[in-house]
Length: 497
Ligand code: NAP
Image 1 (tube, rainbow, N blue to C red):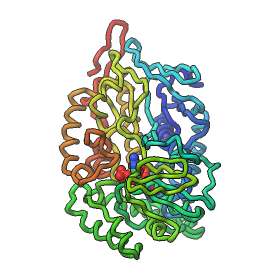
Image 2 (spheres, rainbow, N blue to C red):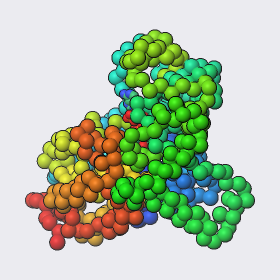
Image 3 (cartoon, rainbow, N blue to C red):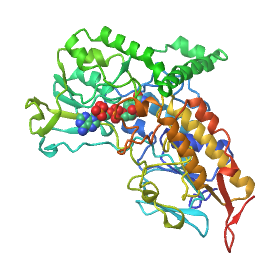
């Protein structure tokens, strides 16, 4: 029986990333690993995001792992419960249950130079001493709650989409939804179906393209699981559907066709010219993540839904007052205001080599090598770390590339007899120099908008400056020259040639 107090690998988070990492370790023959999950169940983002209408805007055939294919999707784009179910299925199919420790929130990570291991403490007082730590706690996990004046004075419930309270019933209520991003465009149509009236507070319009969703019937599902190559064909189509737009994001002149399609969608779905005018963004399409939805514009066109574009002045007991002096009465306020993304590890006590904290290492902004390794933090990997996502490709494709890469890094250590792996600082620096030069020409940086891809200084800390394919290529094999691989010895670490 493996000793989970001294695991080879400790994974933090049992969302799709952590679960996938666990599978990756098993496939690499590593059994002595433990997954620490702060909650009492698996699922991560798909466990907590339970707001009405929550779904995925990436096709299910790509929003799943190639090593854990699933023929049971009921739609081309799945809803939240099906993705949560898929996560549980992966845990069961790959027998990961015995490796997961629930109610185990990590409160500190400290690297021990003397033994080349981490000391990881949980809130409950458990102590682990893994050789390697893999952080799979997600990129979008800290809800952004703006400091609206008078927030405490509102008499009804205020709920963030990522902290949905299932006891909130919006039936027959007046609901104020703040924000018009990816979460908002899903929650608004669902809430509008039940509420008496909905006020949508838009600060910036987002570009919208239709979501070509449809049901996958029993017969099609049967064919998918029996006809050789059919599932692979679906996945290939889904892959290129998400991959092709990235070329435009990197060469914004190519985005004219997407802009044309978005304006056509707007014209077709919003008959009222005054409403249409409020919904046309003034920045290049793709600068903020494009919203895929076919029911958002129709929801805004309902007589019982108002689009409010005046800025929010304050919350009052009876609702939201805008800067033009109007009070928008509400019984419930939904914050679809996104996430704090400047620092993936903000507030986490992560102390690497020579007492270096992650806060200090990232004081000028997050950076890593290939989104996974950070100089000064040996034997630590991030999944979905800085500048590894953000494009249109499925994040699961990116995560799968990272799982393979990390497993291969562990292989490098094993083959060389190393007890420590750390990215060389000059390699990380050179990589980030290249990355930010390439990003400067992308639509995310130059499209004239503000988005969660940019940190408070305006630097893009989220996006990989290329296609999913190019990330896959860059991460297919770790190069040993990128790392210092050393072996712990009684006197000092010995460099491995
Ligand atoms: P978001 O895209 O960052 O949108 C936040 C919205 O809140 C924006 O409209 C923003 O306005 C508004 N907002 C923020 N602070 C505000 C303030 N103080 N006053 C007024 N408005 C304010 O967040 P999100 O919708 O949660 O989505 C974040 C990311 O999560 C997405 O880009 C996507 O990657 C992921 N996501 C994915 C799916 C999926 O289907 N796969 C679904 C949901 C979310 P501005 O635009 O003016 O900043």
